[in-house]
Image (tube, rainbow, N blue to C red; front, side):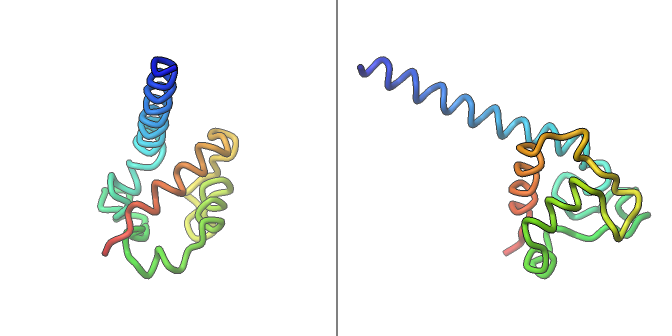
Length: 107
């Protein structure tokens, strides 16, 4: 019984670690070039397109999870360069990105 419990625990930790890697990989592949590694948009494209700093408390408070999810899925109405990802990402990946973006919150 202890062996089974240890096995289940290690598998669940491995799955959680893999899920974390997956969202970081998705962010790196799809988002980082514009939004930067930390959501501050201090990249060449971020500056060129005047992309908002997602780490700002005011932005974090103004955006609901549904707002963020919609921008990822359907693209940004504010910036046409932010294309829709609903055909490229699963709903689970989009939800994971929303949670990931919430980690950028300052203070």
